[in-house]
Image 1 (cartoon, rainbow, N blue to C red):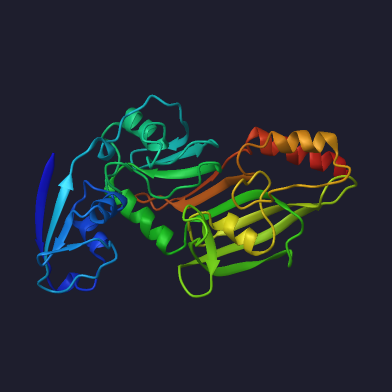
Image 2: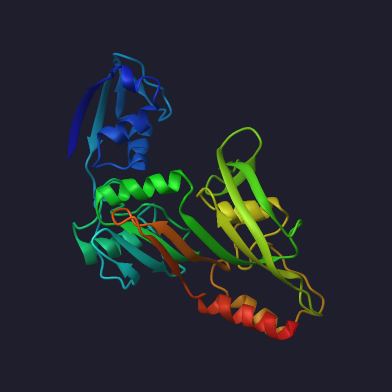
Length: 326
């Protein structure tokens, strides 16, 4: 079904990107879906077809957007098991397993955390992020495990979003990284943008992108015979950019064990410990875990702290390294 919506721009919206403006005005559509509509020729500004989502709007611009209602814009509830760590009338804390995508996207529209939330909580979640992302305030990568906070209502969502933007929410990740990161502890501050080589990946840039800040601390360095040097690293995020920790470790000349995109491609060790290699081959995705999450409760003004156990593959590798190191 097609529907054309008309907008007339006033002063307060001047110089906004047209895709951002439309996503603010049409709550039922995600910004990514609006981008697709524009790129397919469904946007007209002042009688002229516009194909660029980044077009800046001007006062008194007349905007016509042809909204195509499709199955892509519907969230399909799915009975998928989710591990709920905490729940009250305002927030839910989820321990997400590796392999689960947070919300629908290209190639996966049914088997995500959002689909599971829609089944279990129906219409009891915030809608500030659109119909495809009920309650979703932030996300972690598909192959990263760990803690996420979900908003049950728009008040909680708005409050949590503010805590994220002000960097008052505390998130600590544990990871196993190749080699030794120098210095052993520090702060990584860069811009992160889309990779020129692969648009599905991210990279550090000196001239464009979004500011990303990662504080890291090397907890322990493992260096034993027939095993390459590996570091247990704790990362504390001040920002939450796509693939941030993975990109920042790559920028420091390292990468996370099991990372298929930012990691080492061809591991060559002359006499690699057999048990180490077996444990390495069993790591699903990357050895990166969102272990702790702390935030101020949106309504009760109470500081909440949560901690998640390492996934089995991560824990087995760490246990092996600790035994070899003892």
